[in-house]
Length: 79
Image 1: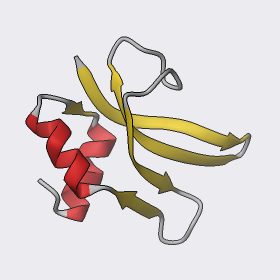
Image 2: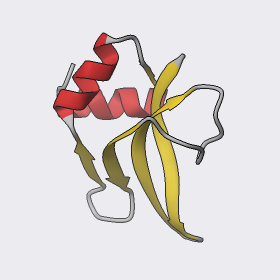
Image 3: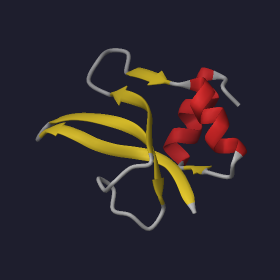
């Protein structure tokens, strides 16, 4: 099953996340199917960039968002 979740990149103590579509059995930073956005929690306010068109596509084919990504989608009023 595909999930839309966060994948961490960046240095220690300086987190930066990619919003990715990935197989649910893969590790957090494993091989992704598609990159659909970014999240930077260090900026004030936190910066969220999502590709609405691709997220709608993946939700349409059955991908399940994580709780955090679901809140991002609701904030951006995508689905």
